[in-house]
Image (tube, rainbow, N blue to C red):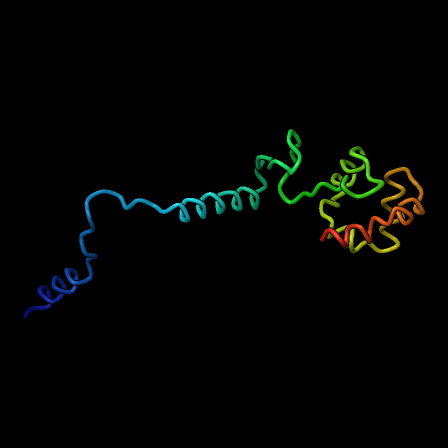
Length: 128
């Protein structure tokens, strides 16, 4: 057998077997995975991602945000300011230091004692 024939034979053996006619239908799980991975790619590139619906009808919040107005003493206006400052989740508030509390109180235009009296940190720890 010549070198040429051996190369042709090895090429034939490497070819993939012929599949059934037409595309293979994707399962619901595959479609869901593709949809989620597209969202993650958009988020990592900084593109706008559509908001998700919250538990309350008619109100929407962005991905990664929680409804901070559920805490006693936090108004919807304060919630918007907290989101603008980057405090989007109960986890963030649960780990505030004394310095962060005073900084947030100054930006919200309120007294630091009001935050401590309302126990935002304790409430946030209970919610997760």
